[in-house]
Length: 93
Image (cartoon, rainbow, N blue to C red; front, top):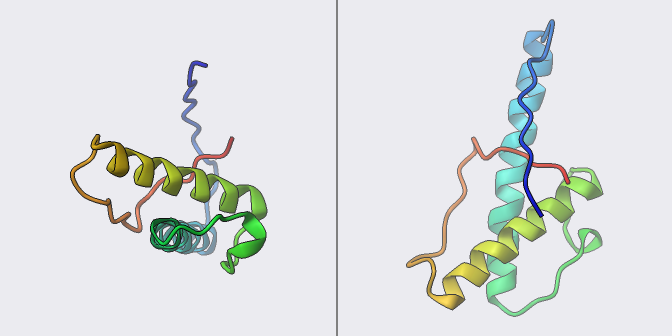
């Protein structure tokens, strides 16, 4: 399946909305890092198991991203477990 990336420009973004988006991005990065830790401990995760204030679709995307990071590490494709930064982009499937 091919990935299609579309860049959109948000119009009339207020400072409040920008701050809200940046805060949500930081929460998402924390969520993905939390999921990586739990997956390394052998837990199975779903959006109901994650207690971050995000919509379930975003939580599920975070779990998928964490699973991919752990899988790459276990297969030897990555030398270390990544630590996701607050600027992590939110991809919605």
